[in-house]
Length: 226
Image (cartoon, rainbow, N blue to C red):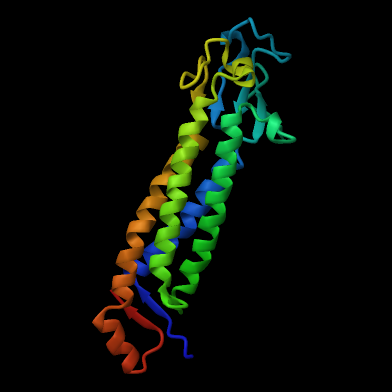
């Protein structure tokens, strides 16, 4: 079967956005800046911590960092590690479920990112449109991300979170901590997933337009259309 490379504004936009969303969500999961604590002196003293007042903790779903800024020195050292060794080592059972759901969403988004590249040449998977299948998968990924983002603040009442954010931390109340950029990146990834699911239908319509079909019949390859 001959491969016709079809590039339209909508298919290109959908492909680039699909790849970007996958990278954003993966970066979010692999970073620590989901919850960020203030310096030690402003945290609750009922949870003593073995580091100086200049240390700031960043706690993610699977990574924990300690950032140290020496006094009067404009440099920052960072010590990060993956802290859960098993499902029982997560800061909260809610975070364990959230991590699993995000992992599944990333797997789906990775597969769709590959589909989005293949869609430049192939428009079908068996008897199904590659765009409709991809859009359906992106909708599922967006739903998984939505659930994981709701479960994340449900785990703020755990001892590990209170250790960094003070004893005032509770479910949906981060105590003295604040949300870091990783949470907002995951939120943007969720919105992007749903947006990609919508754009997949627009991409399919543009790839199946009369102009594209006429260019294929005329033997043009690659086919470029608006």
